Length: 287
Image (tube, rainbow, N blue to C red):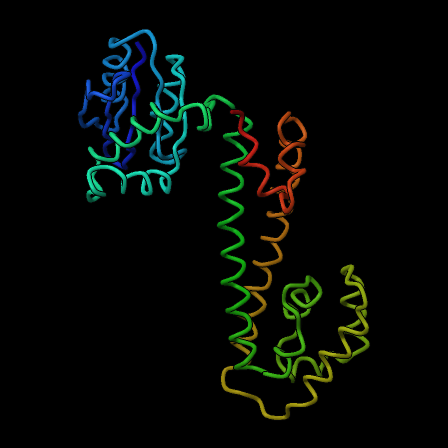
């Protein structure tokens, strides 16, 4: 007989439900999310039968310790996404409200009925764990970049609206430029020729064209707006942070490429439309 184990993962505690082949509940209880509590639950499950399969609705985060302990015991572990649990819940008892006990039961029962179609996971795959961590960190950095660029645009509108309109802040050259000049007065003081040389010395392509756009924007405004110099200093500081973060993101992408190159499933995943490095990395786990 096979026993089907479902864990509804929570932050401070999980709920485990175990079903037999007939779908009858063998075990259903709260499990504290401590090593001692999880070890006790794993031992209890192991004592039920030699043949068992386990499913969770979360990977990483609060499930990391549980996954590691299950892997150490050689359990067969499957992943049932939370969205699948939500949809399946509607078919049980007239779609009862969400509860830890109920979701654990749904997970166990869905595992019993369709384990062959679920993703089997290998928590001890160090490369996969690293890829997931790097992709998550990269996502956070991208969100930070969006927030910073939005802040730069807001400040430039309060300094020189024409300059904000002239610059594409998704490009490195524009970001470098505003670390040097961001007020009409500072642009006029530096001049087009010197600004072009400064940008060219930092590897900016079409530096003269960019300098021309910046100078033209500065010349269109004679009025000096309030606190322009202070705001320009903030623009320079934030733009420098964006440039540093771009390098960090590029380094993360290089590392993800290295990890994907050593993954046997990566070529298959990357052959799918739209599957670049970032999307392919967390999708390259074995089944």
